[in-house]
Amino acid sequence: MIGWRSEFTSVGGVRMHAGELGSGPEVVCVHGLGCSHRYFLPLARELAPRTHVTAPDLPGFGRTPGPREALDVRGLSRALGSWLRATGREGALLVANSAGCQVVADLATHSPELLGPVVLIGPTTDPHLRSWPRQVLGLLADVPWEHPALVLPIVRDYATCGPRRFLATFRHLLADPFERHLPCLPTPTVVLRGTRDPLVTGTWLREAAALVPDGRPVEFQGRGHALNFSAPAETARVVLSLLGEQLVS
Image 1 (cartoon, rainbow, N blue to C red):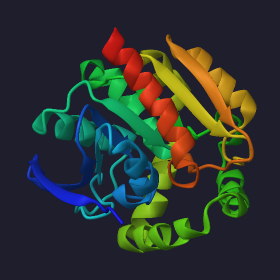
Image 2 (cartoon, rainbow, N blue to C red):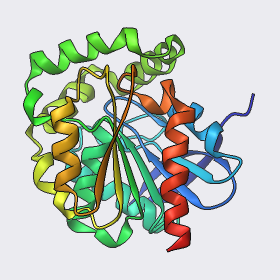
Image 3 (tube, rainbow, N blue to C red):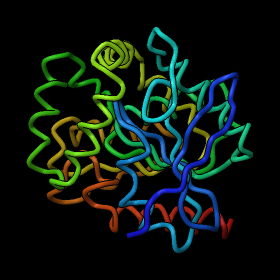
């Protein structure tokens, strides 16, 4: 089966790793809490025949080393922005999952020129569920709705980042005023949710899409939180449709 190729880029003295696959228009994937490029592989395989997919590991996650203290959302978004500039991917279509959506929204507040069209998959943190207990229970409740093969890369990535960084980043995410950043997204944006996603309510899906100047909500029936892994074909169709709109315009 087709797998990732590795790309390394020096960004501010940090050797940032990214997985890359395919050729064509640029699509950049931004991972969620504790994750890495690895769980974007099913989506990348769907997109690779028509696009060039790159999934960077943000500092402290995957194969990119991080500082001793976990970066907050602003620190992660600045790292993403610096990587986009260093690799010449300004204006690429961005696909973010879960906490990666907060990173992309924060990027829009200080470097909106770096964003192309955006797909937000399962955008946390839902302000209606902004507490430790609800988030932890939501993560556990999501397990039955994900593809069983997701367990291996997630466990591996959680072990790589370690509990200290995971928990510190989690605190930063809960403190981030995500909903205040969404109006800063300057490009067409699709907000995606699986109807079985216990971390993102249908109410928040609609609210989030309404906060984005050019946003629209889309729901996948019977799906969970990590649509990029568990519903890659359906997610790829949304990405390609948005990319097609960009190319036509």
